[in-house]
Length: 187
Image (cartoon, rainbow, N blue to C red; front, side):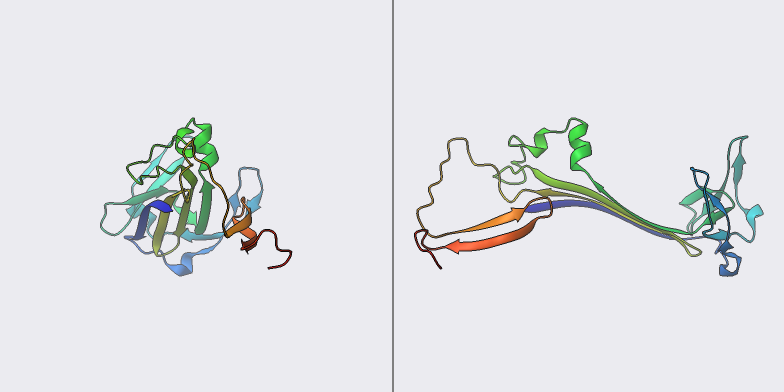
């Protein structure tokens, strides 16, 4: 019936471009101790950047064009391209947000049917390479096709009707049929 979406998009170019010739495979140590070799960018003039360190970490400020945004990282960093999908229903309900998913949802300001939330999902994409960073995120909240029937509602199927048998976890319709005469053996 309705989907609400909130989105953000960022495309930022490094103030000091990274030379592709300086991008080479380099060891990257995972938390589990294993090592992979991603394409790793190295800045040709690291002394131009703000730098901070302690005994446990070190970081450098890599500004984007316009000098309003910056990424804080080690002097050389791997290129990456990540996507993430996070279903929201279970975490939100787990945090105690149960009413919006039930018959007392209270979204009458959105629709007179006051539909409950059917599904929520968050998706994020980020790419970091020699040119800069591109990132986008969107959160979508889908509302059920209709609100629950009033408690005193009754339904009598006494005229031609259609039905569908749906695998709800996937939203896939397995069977669809129009019944014009339930006493007929063939339609």
